[in-house]
Length: 544
Image 1: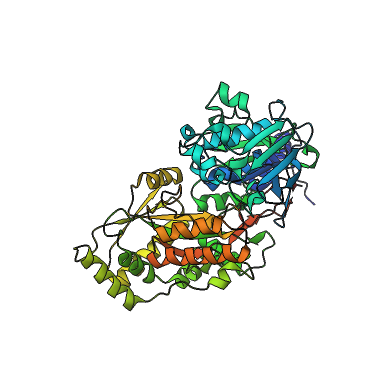
Image 2: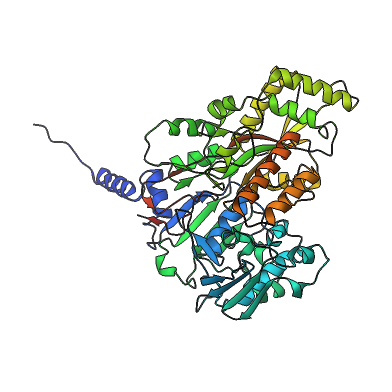
Protein backbone atom coordinates (compact mmCIF):
# COMPACT_ATOMS: atom_id res chain seq x y z
CA UNK A 1 0.00 0.00 0.00
CA UNK A 2 1.31 3.36 -0.97
CA UNK A 3 1.73 5.79 1.95
CA UNK A 4 0.36 9.31 1.75
CA UNK A 5 2.64 12.25 2.19
CA UNK A 6 1.50 14.73 4.98
CA UNK A 7 3.50 17.93 5.10
CA UNK A 8 4.07 20.14 8.15
CA UNK A 9 2.10 22.90 6.41
CA UNK A 10 -0.88 20.62 5.91
CA UNK A 11 -0.67 19.60 9.57
CA UNK A 12 -0.71 23.24 10.70
CA UNK A 13 -3.67 23.97 8.44
CA UNK A 14 -5.61 21.04 9.86
CA UNK A 15 -4.97 22.21 13.43
CA UNK A 16 -6.12 25.74 12.54
CA UNK A 17 -9.35 24.40 11.02
CA UNK A 18 -10.01 22.32 14.13
CA UNK A 19 -9.52 25.32 16.37
CA UNK A 20 -11.81 27.46 14.20
CA UNK A 21 -14.52 24.81 14.38
CA UNK A 22 -14.24 24.62 18.15
CA UNK A 23 -14.34 28.39 18.65
CA UNK A 24 -16.80 29.35 15.94
CA UNK A 25 -19.74 27.08 15.42
CA UNK A 26 -23.08 28.06 14.00
CA UNK A 27 -24.56 31.53 14.36
CA UNK A 28 -27.21 30.15 16.70
CA UNK A 29 -24.65 28.57 19.01
CA UNK A 30 -22.57 31.74 19.03
CA UNK A 31 -25.55 33.91 19.88
CA UNK A 32 -26.72 31.56 22.60
CA UNK A 33 -23.33 31.93 24.24
CA UNK A 34 -23.41 35.69 23.98
CA UNK A 35 -26.88 36.00 25.42
CA UNK A 36 -27.39 33.02 27.66
CA UNK A 37 -25.86 30.77 30.21
CA UNK A 38 -22.59 30.57 28.39
CA UNK A 39 -21.02 33.97 27.73
CA UNK A 40 -17.51 34.51 28.99
CA UNK A 41 -18.77 35.78 32.36
CA UNK A 42 -21.29 32.97 32.80
CA UNK A 43 -24.19 35.42 33.00
CA UNK A 44 -27.76 34.70 31.96
CA UNK A 45 -29.04 37.21 29.43
CA UNK A 46 -32.47 37.12 27.78
CA UNK A 47 -32.85 38.71 24.35
CA UNK A 48 -36.21 40.09 23.26
CA UNK A 49 -37.60 42.72 20.87
CA UNK A 50 -39.60 45.72 22.08
CA UNK A 51 -40.72 46.78 18.55
CA UNK A 52 -40.87 50.53 19.26
CA UNK A 53 -38.73 53.25 20.83
CA UNK A 54 -40.20 54.32 24.19
CA UNK A 55 -41.26 57.95 24.48
CA UNK A 56 -40.46 57.96 28.21
CA UNK A 57 -39.64 55.40 30.88
CA UNK A 58 -41.24 57.55 33.58
CA UNK A 59 -44.32 55.99 35.26
CA UNK A 60 -46.26 59.26 35.03
CA UNK A 61 -45.45 59.94 31.37
CA UNK A 62 -45.65 56.48 29.81
CA UNK A 63 -48.67 55.80 27.63
CA UNK A 64 -48.21 52.57 25.68
CA UNK A 65 -47.14 48.93 25.81
CA UNK A 66 -43.81 49.87 24.19
CA UNK A 67 -43.05 51.61 27.51
CA UNK A 68 -45.06 49.59 30.01
CA UNK A 69 -43.32 46.31 29.09
CA UNK A 70 -40.04 47.75 30.35
CA UNK A 71 -41.58 49.59 33.30
CA UNK A 72 -43.25 46.40 34.52
CA UNK A 73 -39.81 44.83 34.89
CA UNK A 74 -37.97 47.84 36.30
CA UNK A 75 -40.60 49.15 38.75
CA UNK A 76 -43.00 47.66 41.26
CA UNK A 77 -46.21 49.04 42.73
CA UNK A 78 -47.84 48.37 46.07
CA UNK A 79 -49.14 45.12 44.58
CA UNK A 80 -48.24 42.81 41.70
CA UNK A 81 -49.87 39.87 39.92
CA UNK A 82 -49.11 36.18 39.75
CA UNK A 83 -49.18 34.06 36.61
CA UNK A 84 -52.81 33.21 37.43
CA UNK A 85 -53.71 36.90 37.71
CA UNK A 86 -53.99 36.88 41.50
CA UNK A 87 -53.14 40.19 43.21
CA UNK A 88 -50.37 39.71 45.79
CA UNK A 89 -48.17 42.03 47.87
CA UNK A 90 -45.53 43.97 45.97
CA UNK A 91 -43.80 46.82 47.75
CA UNK A 92 -46.61 46.67 50.30
CA UNK A 93 -46.64 43.76 52.71
CA UNK A 94 -50.29 44.20 53.73
CA UNK A 95 -53.34 46.46 53.50
CA UNK A 96 -56.59 47.16 55.30
CA UNK A 97 -59.86 48.55 53.92
CA UNK A 98 -62.40 50.52 55.93
CA UNK A 99 -65.96 49.22 56.15
CA UNK A 100 -67.25 51.92 53.80
CA UNK A 101 -64.57 51.04 51.21
CA UNK A 102 -63.22 54.58 51.13
CA UNK A 103 -60.01 54.32 53.15
CA UNK A 104 -57.18 51.95 52.26
CA UNK A 105 -54.14 51.67 54.54
CA UNK A 106 -51.04 50.08 53.03
CA UNK A 107 -48.05 48.93 55.07
CA UNK A 108 -44.76 48.82 53.15
CA UNK A 109 -42.13 46.13 53.49
CA UNK A 110 -39.07 46.89 55.64
CA UNK A 111 -35.78 47.83 54.04
CA UNK A 112 -37.03 48.77 50.58
CA UNK A 113 -34.43 50.52 48.40
CA UNK A 114 -34.17 52.29 45.08
CA UNK A 115 -31.75 50.97 42.47
CA UNK A 116 -29.32 53.76 43.44
CA UNK A 117 -29.37 52.65 47.08
CA UNK A 118 -31.67 55.36 48.44
CA UNK A 119 -34.28 54.14 50.94
CA UNK A 120 -37.77 53.79 49.45
CA UNK A 121 -40.60 54.96 51.70
CA UNK A 122 -44.33 55.64 51.63
CA UNK A 123 -43.46 59.26 50.83
CA UNK A 124 -42.24 58.13 47.39
CA UNK A 125 -45.69 56.75 46.58
CA UNK A 126 -47.44 59.88 47.81
CA UNK A 127 -45.07 62.07 45.82
CA UNK A 128 -45.41 59.96 42.64
CA UNK A 129 -49.20 59.92 42.63
CA UNK A 130 -49.44 63.66 43.24
CA UNK A 131 -46.78 64.27 40.60
CA UNK A 132 -48.86 62.37 38.02
CA UNK A 133 -51.90 64.45 38.99
CA UNK A 134 -50.04 67.77 38.89
CA UNK A 135 -51.52 69.75 35.95
CA UNK A 136 -48.05 70.76 34.74
CA UNK A 137 -47.05 67.08 34.35
CA UNK A 138 -49.77 66.64 31.69
CA UNK A 139 -49.86 62.88 32.33
CA UNK A 140 -52.15 61.05 29.92
CA UNK A 141 -52.98 58.55 32.63
CA UNK A 142 -53.72 61.11 35.35
CA UNK A 143 -57.38 60.09 35.12
CA UNK A 144 -56.52 56.72 36.66
CA UNK A 145 -55.83 58.65 39.87
CA UNK A 146 -59.20 60.39 39.82
CA UNK A 147 -60.37 57.62 42.13
CA UNK A 148 -58.43 59.45 44.87
CA UNK A 149 -60.39 62.01 46.82
CA UNK A 150 -59.64 65.41 45.29
CA UNK A 151 -57.60 63.85 42.47
CA UNK A 152 -59.65 65.14 39.56
CA UNK A 153 -60.09 68.55 41.19
CA UNK A 154 -56.33 68.95 41.60
CA UNK A 155 -55.57 67.76 38.05
CA UNK A 156 -58.12 70.17 36.58
CA UNK A 157 -56.80 73.10 38.64
CA UNK A 158 -59.94 73.27 40.77
CA UNK A 159 -58.40 71.84 43.94
CA UNK A 160 -55.23 71.80 46.01
CA UNK A 161 -52.43 69.24 46.16
CA UNK A 162 -52.76 68.89 49.93
CA UNK A 163 -56.39 67.83 49.52
CA UNK A 164 -55.57 64.81 47.36
CA UNK A 165 -56.45 61.58 49.16
CA UNK A 166 -53.02 60.00 49.54
CA UNK A 167 -50.83 60.57 52.59
CA UNK A 168 -47.70 58.95 53.99
CA UNK A 169 -48.35 59.00 57.74
CA UNK A 170 -44.88 57.53 58.36
CA UNK A 171 -42.16 55.89 56.28
CA UNK A 172 -44.00 52.56 56.16
CA UNK A 173 -47.65 53.64 56.03
CA UNK A 174 -49.62 55.01 53.09
CA UNK A 175 -53.22 56.04 53.72
CA UNK A 176 -55.41 56.38 50.62
CA UNK A 177 -58.85 58.03 50.65
CA UNK A 178 -61.12 57.48 47.65
CA UNK A 179 -63.84 59.69 46.23
CA UNK A 180 -66.17 56.69 46.23
CA UNK A 181 -65.85 52.94 46.78
CA UNK A 182 -63.94 51.38 43.87
CA UNK A 183 -64.11 47.57 43.65
CA UNK A 184 -61.05 47.28 41.40
CA UNK A 185 -58.81 49.77 43.22
CA UNK A 186 -56.44 47.06 44.50
CA UNK A 187 -55.95 45.90 40.91
CA UNK A 188 -55.05 49.47 39.95
CA UNK A 189 -52.21 49.61 42.49
CA UNK A 190 -50.24 47.19 40.30
CA UNK A 191 -50.61 49.48 37.26
CA UNK A 192 -47.62 51.62 36.24
CA UNK A 193 -49.20 55.04 36.87
CA UNK A 194 -49.31 53.98 40.54
CA UNK A 195 -45.59 53.13 40.70
CA UNK A 196 -43.43 55.23 43.05
CA UNK A 197 -40.78 57.68 41.88
CA UNK A 198 -37.73 58.93 43.76
CA UNK A 199 -38.52 62.49 44.85
CA UNK A 200 -34.88 63.50 45.25
CA UNK A 201 -33.98 62.24 41.76
CA UNK A 202 -37.04 63.88 40.17
CA UNK A 203 -36.39 67.28 41.71
CA UNK A 204 -32.67 67.28 40.97
CA UNK A 205 -33.10 66.16 37.34
CA UNK A 206 -36.59 66.31 35.75
CA UNK A 207 -35.23 64.42 32.70
CA UNK A 208 -33.88 61.45 34.68
CA UNK A 209 -36.24 58.98 32.95
CA UNK A 210 -34.88 59.68 29.44
CA UNK A 211 -31.35 58.35 30.02
CA UNK A 212 -30.06 55.06 31.41
CA UNK A 213 -27.27 56.86 33.28
CA UNK A 214 -29.78 58.73 35.44
CA UNK A 215 -32.66 56.24 35.52
CA UNK A 216 -33.67 55.06 39.00
CA UNK A 217 -36.29 52.39 39.72
CA UNK A 218 -37.42 50.00 42.45
CA UNK A 219 -38.22 46.79 40.58
CA UNK A 220 -36.35 43.52 39.99
CA UNK A 221 -34.35 45.06 37.14
CA UNK A 222 -32.75 48.45 36.48
CA UNK A 223 -32.13 50.28 33.21
CA UNK A 224 -28.40 50.30 32.43
CA UNK A 225 -28.23 51.09 28.71
CA UNK A 226 -30.45 52.95 26.25
CA UNK A 227 -29.22 53.37 22.69
CA UNK A 228 -32.13 55.37 21.33
CA UNK A 229 -34.01 53.73 18.44
CA UNK A 230 -31.58 50.80 18.62
CA UNK A 231 -31.68 48.89 21.93
CA UNK A 232 -32.14 48.95 25.71
CA UNK A 233 -30.65 46.84 28.44
CA UNK A 234 -31.94 46.14 31.93
CA UNK A 235 -29.90 44.29 34.56
CA UNK A 236 -30.75 42.57 37.82
CA UNK A 237 -31.30 45.11 40.58
CA UNK A 238 -29.18 44.02 43.53
CA UNK A 239 -31.16 46.38 45.79
CA UNK A 240 -34.48 44.62 45.05
CA UNK A 241 -35.89 42.96 48.19
CA UNK A 242 -36.63 39.71 46.32
CA UNK A 243 -33.36 39.62 44.35
CA UNK A 244 -32.61 35.99 45.30
CA UNK A 245 -35.59 34.88 43.20
CA UNK A 246 -34.35 36.72 40.11
CA UNK A 247 -32.44 34.25 37.94
CA UNK A 248 -31.61 36.42 34.92
CA UNK A 249 -28.64 38.77 35.04
CA UNK A 250 -29.88 40.98 32.24
CA UNK A 251 -32.41 41.45 29.45
CA UNK A 252 -31.54 43.00 26.11
CA UNK A 253 -34.37 44.73 24.23
CA UNK A 254 -33.82 45.21 20.51
CA UNK A 255 -35.90 48.06 19.04
CA UNK A 256 -37.00 46.70 15.68
CA UNK A 257 -40.39 47.67 14.27
CA UNK A 258 -40.51 45.02 11.55
CA UNK A 259 -41.81 41.80 13.08
CA UNK A 260 -40.48 39.80 10.11
CA UNK A 261 -36.93 40.93 10.92
CA UNK A 262 -37.52 40.10 14.59
CA UNK A 263 -38.77 36.65 13.59
CA UNK A 264 -35.64 36.02 11.54
CA UNK A 265 -33.58 37.01 14.59
CA UNK A 266 -35.55 34.53 16.70
CA UNK A 267 -34.95 31.76 14.19
CA UNK A 268 -31.22 32.50 14.08
CA UNK A 269 -30.97 32.46 17.89
CA UNK A 270 -30.45 36.21 18.29
CA UNK A 271 -33.75 36.50 20.21
CA UNK A 272 -35.04 34.18 22.93
CA UNK A 273 -38.60 35.48 22.85
CA UNK A 274 -40.61 36.68 19.87
CA UNK A 275 -43.71 38.85 20.25
CA UNK A 276 -45.59 39.94 18.21
CA UNK A 277 -45.25 37.32 15.48
CA UNK A 278 -45.67 37.93 11.75
CA UNK A 279 -49.23 37.09 10.74
CA UNK A 280 -48.28 34.19 8.45
CA UNK A 281 -46.16 32.67 11.22
CA UNK A 282 -49.08 33.00 13.64
CA UNK A 283 -51.22 31.05 11.20
CA UNK A 284 -48.62 28.29 10.95
CA UNK A 285 -48.03 28.04 14.67
CA UNK A 286 -51.70 28.03 15.71
CA UNK A 287 -52.09 24.79 13.78
CA UNK A 288 -48.77 23.26 14.80
CA UNK A 289 -47.50 21.37 17.82
CA UNK A 290 -44.34 23.45 18.15
CA UNK A 291 -43.32 23.33 21.82
CA UNK A 292 -41.86 26.84 21.66
CA UNK A 293 -45.24 28.31 20.68
CA UNK A 294 -47.46 29.77 23.39
CA UNK A 295 -51.02 31.06 23.04
CA UNK A 296 -51.69 33.48 25.87
CA UNK A 297 -55.01 35.06 26.68
CA UNK A 298 -55.29 38.79 25.98
CA UNK A 299 -57.59 41.41 27.43
CA UNK A 300 -57.50 43.73 24.44
CA UNK A 301 -59.40 45.03 21.42
CA UNK A 302 -58.10 46.01 17.97
CA UNK A 303 -60.02 48.91 16.44
CA UNK A 304 -59.94 51.99 14.20
CA UNK A 305 -60.57 55.52 15.46
CA UNK A 306 -62.77 57.83 13.42
CA UNK A 307 -61.84 61.49 13.80
CA UNK A 308 -65.37 62.67 14.61
CA UNK A 309 -64.29 66.31 14.33
CA UNK A 310 -63.58 65.93 10.60
CA UNK A 311 -66.36 65.76 7.98
CA UNK A 312 -67.98 63.41 7.12
CA UNK A 313 -66.76 61.26 10.04
CA UNK A 314 -68.73 63.54 12.35
CA UNK A 315 -71.79 61.72 10.99
CA UNK A 316 -72.77 58.52 12.80
CA UNK A 317 -74.38 57.02 9.68
CA UNK A 318 -71.13 57.34 7.73
CA UNK A 319 -69.17 55.74 10.57
CA UNK A 320 -71.66 52.87 10.93
CA UNK A 321 -71.66 52.28 7.17
CA UNK A 322 -67.88 51.85 7.10
CA UNK A 323 -67.99 49.56 10.13
CA UNK A 324 -70.80 47.37 8.76
CA UNK A 325 -69.04 46.97 5.40
CA UNK A 326 -65.96 45.07 6.59
CA UNK A 327 -65.80 41.30 7.02
CA UNK A 328 -64.16 40.57 10.35
CA UNK A 329 -64.12 36.79 10.07
CA UNK A 330 -62.08 37.03 6.88
CA UNK A 331 -59.64 39.38 8.63
CA UNK A 332 -59.15 37.10 11.63
CA UNK A 333 -58.91 33.88 9.64
CA UNK A 334 -57.00 35.01 6.54
CA UNK A 335 -54.98 38.02 7.69
CA UNK A 336 -54.41 38.15 11.48
CA UNK A 337 -54.37 34.32 11.75
CA UNK A 338 -53.81 34.24 15.50
CA UNK A 339 -57.08 32.76 16.68
CA UNK A 340 -58.60 36.20 17.27
CA UNK A 341 -62.34 36.64 17.75
CA UNK A 342 -64.26 39.17 15.58
CA UNK A 343 -65.34 42.14 17.71
CA UNK A 344 -68.89 43.50 17.63
CA UNK A 345 -68.31 45.58 20.76
CA UNK A 346 -65.28 46.86 22.66
CA UNK A 347 -65.18 44.86 25.91
CA UNK A 348 -63.30 41.58 25.28
CA UNK A 349 -63.99 38.16 26.82
CA UNK A 350 -62.38 37.36 30.17
CA UNK A 351 -63.98 39.97 32.44
CA UNK A 352 -66.44 38.77 35.09
CA UNK A 353 -69.96 40.25 34.97
CA UNK A 354 -72.30 40.35 37.96
CA UNK A 355 -72.97 36.83 36.74
CA UNK A 356 -71.01 35.09 34.00
CA UNK A 357 -68.73 36.76 31.45
CA UNK A 358 -69.37 40.41 30.52
CA UNK A 359 -68.71 40.04 26.79
CA UNK A 360 -70.67 36.80 26.46
CA UNK A 361 -73.62 38.46 28.19
CA UNK A 362 -73.35 41.44 25.86
CA UNK A 363 -73.31 39.45 22.65
CA UNK A 364 -73.01 41.25 19.29
CA UNK A 365 -73.99 44.93 19.46
CA UNK A 366 -74.18 45.33 15.66
CA UNK A 367 -73.97 43.22 12.52
CA UNK A 368 -72.22 43.33 9.18
CA UNK A 369 -74.62 44.21 6.38
CA UNK A 370 -73.36 45.61 3.07
CA UNK A 371 -76.84 46.54 1.80
CA UNK A 372 -77.62 48.52 4.95
CA UNK A 373 -74.11 50.02 4.88
CA UNK A 374 -74.66 51.41 1.37
CA UNK A 375 -77.98 52.93 2.45
CA UNK A 376 -76.47 54.54 5.58
CA UNK A 377 -73.48 55.89 3.66
CA UNK A 378 -75.72 57.58 1.10
CA UNK A 379 -77.94 59.08 3.82
CA UNK A 380 -75.01 60.22 5.95
CA UNK A 381 -73.22 61.92 3.07
CA UNK A 382 -76.44 63.67 2.02
CA UNK A 383 -76.85 65.02 5.54
CA UNK A 384 -73.36 66.52 5.26
CA UNK A 385 -74.04 67.97 1.82
CA UNK A 386 -71.75 65.49 0.05
CA UNK A 387 -72.27 63.07 -2.81
CA UNK A 388 -69.26 60.91 -2.10
CA UNK A 389 -66.55 60.42 0.48
CA UNK A 390 -63.63 62.83 0.03
CA UNK A 391 -60.10 61.42 -0.14
CA UNK A 392 -59.02 60.05 3.25
CA UNK A 393 -56.43 57.70 4.72
CA UNK A 394 -55.92 55.06 7.38
CA UNK A 395 -53.01 55.90 9.67
CA UNK A 396 -51.27 52.89 11.22
CA UNK A 397 -48.02 52.30 13.07
CA UNK A 398 -45.24 50.48 11.27
CA UNK A 399 -45.86 46.77 11.64
CA UNK A 400 -46.45 44.39 8.75
CA UNK A 401 -49.54 42.96 10.46
CA UNK A 402 -51.16 46.42 10.71
CA UNK A 403 -50.36 47.03 7.06
CA UNK A 404 -51.99 43.78 5.97
CA UNK A 405 -55.11 44.43 8.02
CA UNK A 406 -55.36 47.98 6.61
CA UNK A 407 -54.97 46.58 3.09
CA UNK A 408 -57.78 44.10 3.76
CA UNK A 409 -60.07 46.87 5.05
CA UNK A 410 -59.10 49.03 2.08
CA UNK A 411 -60.13 46.25 -0.31
CA UNK A 412 -63.41 45.54 1.48
CA UNK A 413 -64.44 49.20 1.36
CA UNK A 414 -63.56 49.33 -2.32
CA UNK A 415 -65.47 46.13 -3.16
CA UNK A 416 -68.46 46.63 -0.86
CA UNK A 417 -68.96 50.40 -0.96
CA UNK A 418 -67.00 51.64 -3.94
CA UNK A 419 -64.91 53.74 -1.54
CA UNK A 420 -61.22 54.44 -2.13
CA UNK A 421 -58.86 55.01 0.82
CA UNK A 422 -55.09 55.45 1.02
CA UNK A 423 -52.80 53.97 3.65
CA UNK A 424 -50.23 55.86 5.71
CA UNK A 425 -47.76 54.35 8.14
CA UNK A 426 -45.73 56.04 10.90
CA UNK A 427 -43.61 55.07 13.89
CA UNK A 428 -45.72 54.19 16.91
CA UNK A 429 -44.84 57.28 18.93
CA UNK A 430 -45.45 59.51 15.89
CA UNK A 431 -48.86 57.89 15.42
CA UNK A 432 -49.73 58.50 19.08
CA UNK A 433 -48.68 62.13 18.82
CA UNK A 434 -50.74 62.65 15.67
CA UNK A 435 -53.80 61.11 17.30
CA UNK A 436 -53.47 63.48 20.25
CA UNK A 437 -53.20 66.41 17.82
CA UNK A 438 -56.24 65.24 15.80
CA UNK A 439 -54.05 64.92 12.71
CA UNK A 440 -55.79 61.94 11.06
CA UNK A 441 -59.05 60.81 9.50
CA UNK A 442 -59.02 57.15 10.55
CA UNK A 443 -56.28 55.59 12.68
CA UNK A 444 -55.44 52.08 13.76
CA UNK A 445 -55.57 51.58 17.53
CA UNK A 446 -55.52 48.89 20.18
CA UNK A 447 -56.33 48.90 23.85
CA UNK A 448 -55.05 46.49 26.50
CA UNK A 449 -57.06 46.57 29.73
CA UNK A 450 -55.25 48.31 32.56
CA UNK A 451 -57.20 46.19 35.06
CA UNK A 452 -59.77 43.41 34.85
CA UNK A 453 -63.02 45.37 34.74
CA UNK A 454 -65.19 46.67 31.85
CA UNK A 455 -64.52 50.25 33.02
CA UNK A 456 -61.01 50.08 31.58
CA UNK A 457 -62.55 49.85 28.09
CA UNK A 458 -64.84 52.86 28.55
CA UNK A 459 -62.42 55.30 26.93
CA UNK A 460 -64.79 57.62 25.14
CA UNK A 461 -65.91 59.86 27.97
CA UNK A 462 -66.07 63.52 26.89
CA UNK A 463 -62.51 64.91 26.84
CA UNK A 464 -61.14 61.56 28.05
CA UNK A 465 -57.36 61.21 27.79
CA UNK A 466 -57.63 58.34 25.28
CA UNK A 467 -60.76 59.48 23.50
CA UNK A 468 -58.78 60.09 20.31
CA UNK A 469 -62.00 59.95 18.29
CA UNK A 470 -63.07 63.25 19.92
CA UNK A 471 -66.58 61.88 20.45
CA UNK A 472 -68.94 63.24 23.11
CA UNK A 473 -72.25 61.88 24.38
CA UNK A 474 -73.99 62.98 27.60
CA UNK A 475 -75.86 59.71 28.06
CA UNK A 476 -72.59 57.76 27.83
CA UNK A 477 -70.92 60.12 30.31
CA UNK A 478 -73.82 59.82 32.77
CA UNK A 479 -73.84 56.03 32.59
CA UNK A 480 -70.12 55.95 33.44
CA UNK A 481 -70.74 58.25 36.41
CA UNK A 482 -73.53 55.94 37.53
CA UNK A 483 -71.23 52.91 37.28
CA UNK A 484 -68.55 54.71 39.32
CA UNK A 485 -70.96 55.77 42.06
CA UNK A 486 -72.25 52.37 43.16
CA UNK A 487 -70.72 49.32 44.80
CA UNK A 488 -73.69 47.15 43.82
CA UNK A 489 -72.25 44.70 41.22
CA UNK A 490 -75.45 44.38 39.19
CA UNK A 491 -76.09 48.13 39.07
CA UNK A 492 -72.48 48.76 38.01
CA UNK A 493 -72.50 46.16 35.26
CA UNK A 494 -75.93 47.16 33.96
CA UNK A 495 -74.72 50.75 33.59
CA UNK A 496 -71.56 49.61 31.79
CA UNK A 497 -73.53 47.37 29.42
CA UNK A 498 -75.76 50.33 28.55
CA UNK A 499 -72.76 52.62 28.09
CA UNK A 500 -71.08 50.22 25.67
CA UNK A 501 -74.31 49.97 23.65
CA UNK A 502 -74.72 53.77 23.49
CA UNK A 503 -71.18 54.12 22.19
CA UNK A 504 -71.48 51.33 19.61
CA UNK A 505 -74.79 52.73 18.38
CA UNK A 506 -72.94 55.89 17.35
CA UNK A 507 -69.74 54.05 16.34
CA UNK A 508 -66.99 56.65 17.00
CA UNK A 509 -64.61 53.72 16.64
CA UNK A 510 -64.67 50.65 14.41
CA UNK A 511 -64.05 47.43 16.39
CA UNK A 512 -62.17 44.78 14.40
CA UNK A 513 -61.25 41.89 16.70
CA UNK A 514 -60.38 40.82 20.23
CA UNK A 515 -56.69 40.00 20.54
CA UNK A 516 -54.98 36.79 21.46
CA UNK A 517 -51.36 36.64 22.59
CA UNK A 518 -49.36 34.21 20.42
CA UNK A 519 -45.64 34.28 21.21
CA UNK A 520 -42.53 32.12 20.96
CA UNK A 521 -40.03 31.27 23.71
CA UNK A 522 -36.89 29.21 23.24
CA UNK A 523 -36.95 25.78 24.87
CA UNK A 524 -33.99 26.63 27.10
CA UNK A 525 -35.94 29.50 28.70
CA UNK A 526 -38.31 28.77 31.59
CA UNK A 527 -40.54 30.84 33.86
CA UNK A 528 -42.01 33.19 31.24
CA UNK A 529 -45.75 33.76 31.63
CA UNK A 530 -48.31 36.01 29.98
CA UNK A 531 -50.66 38.02 32.23
CA UNK A 532 -54.06 38.53 30.64
CA UNK A 533 -53.54 42.30 30.34
CA UNK A 534 -49.80 42.62 29.77
CA UNK A 535 -46.96 41.49 27.52
CA UNK A 536 -45.07 38.27 28.40
CA UNK A 537 -43.48 38.57 31.84
CA UNK A 538 -39.96 37.28 32.50
CA UNK A 539 -39.26 38.63 35.99
CA UNK A 540 -38.79 35.10 37.34
CA UNK A 541 -37.53 33.55 34.10
CA UNK A 542 -34.42 31.40 33.86
CA UNK A 543 -32.17 30.46 30.96
CA UNK A 544 -30.16 27.26 30.73
